[in-house]
Length: 457
Image 1 (tube, rainbow, N blue to C red):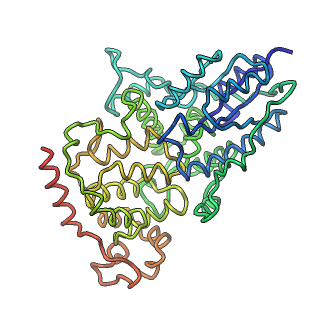
Image 2: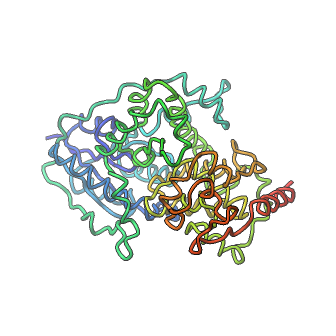
Image 3: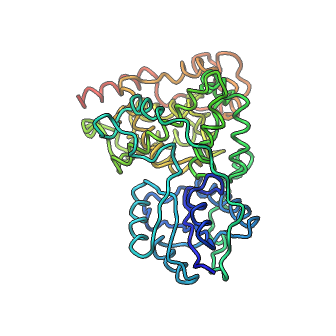
């Protein structure tokens, strides 16, 4: 028997269209390994919602591997140390993996390569980050020209099928028990509602693609309507690599209608990763340096407002509905994400990094690149971003995008409020006694934000 090879899994938890698995299976017996490495990630270790997803995704992947006569080996610690230990146990010298671009994963890959023969493959993005460049060969910083250039290489190749067989080693190495990692919350079980919304794993991802195909042609019209939830809801499956973006593109590209808008969202995901490849600390540092002078409110006095925002108790129904949906399901409708983020940054004048950190902990699709790029877009601090002076009016946005049923679902205090009053119960004299008044008026918040912007200028 040939020597076993290791398959190092991270955010690529699938068997289909998995270049590292295909290469490993072609060489000999395969030992699939997932290492829970909080030490290398440090302050960017996965948040609570992501850990819930990870538990169920790993369990689903192990079931698929066992159907192929294989299994998933779990280890906890630094990746390079744990992979070297597994390699010693089974007599392996080579590791195959899908290349990752977050700064801590790049550090981990360098460390692994010092101990073992590491072979990296691509597959988490439509194109490998860094390969789409300007005519002069420099990376793009603005989305629109990046998207035009990316489209020249589309559609992606056909998705590769999962191997028919995955050879097993003569003896399996020791493995942690998934339950011992305590990834699931217990006291309290704040993720109780997650299972009603999500089916983590490759099979759940493909079912979600199939469901989206039924309305992909109406994407542009429906994606902004929270009460319809016309978005694909594929973001956590893509983040954990349970389905490849190439597969999603191929399945949806001929849906017709406005599906091109959805394909552009896949392109934005690639764009965000390309930005983080250029600026590894982008999710924590203003891209526009002048915003380092922004007079954000001191949290010693603003902490109560930050807590009200997190808890969905701001008195703005559309904001509160989004924040409560986030807590209950680990996800928030995209249009409402922008409204809630803008409210924190501009109405409450709280540093965007506070919101980025909260989303990092509470989103099942918390992605280092996308989360950071999206928050800087809303804040106006990013390389390609909305202007800070463009301040979303949450009450107007709620009415414009017909969010009434969405609000009634997630803010039970307002279930009995009918008609236009649902968007602004205070204004219509319909605010129930158990629903809070606005923590700040729209005009007051807007003027304070513009005054802070003048200080930056």
